[in-house]
Structures are given as C-alpha cells and as structure tokens.
Image (cartoon, rainbow, N blue to C red; front, side, top):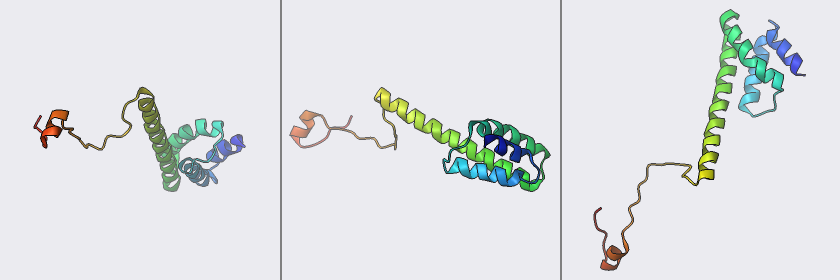
Length: 112
C-alpha cells in the first residue's frame, strides 16, 4: 500500500489528491505507512519547484501539516520530560506570594 502512495505522489494525474490526502492524514493522526512518511517531504519539496500552482499548494499544505505535527509532538515530549523531572508543565505567568506564619498571626501580609 505504501508503494502505491509513493507512486501516486509521483503520478502527475494523482499528485495533488495524494498530497491533500496525506495532509489530512497527518492532521487527523491517521496511520500513514512508513515509506510514505519518508518519501512525502522529499516529493513535496521537489513538487514545490516543478509542479503547477495547484500541486504546489498541495505540497505546501502537506509540509505545513507535517511541520505542525512535529512541533506538537515536541511540545508534548517537553511536557513529559518536565513532568518526569518534577517541574511545572505550564507557566501562565501568575505569581503567588505567600505570607509567612508570623505575618498571618498578626493579621496581615508584609511586603517582601
């Protein structure tokens, strides 16, 4: 099956449809054969130089979908690594100042 996908990417009559199908597969996390994943960026890059405008647009959509998928995977990997290290996984820029015990007993917070 993966050989058919790679052949369709190189077939001028099926290039655009195959590129868009692969872009949808990447966006929707559908399984893609390893040979197609390996060939897709190379073929898309070649088609950006050689293809007509519609094929170029399909190649761009595929490359952008693959890039977005890679970035999302890196973000998740970073979160997992921080969780395993005991660090915060999200930083929303909220700073919380805690009063010390003596200040609480006196009924107020002191400035730090």
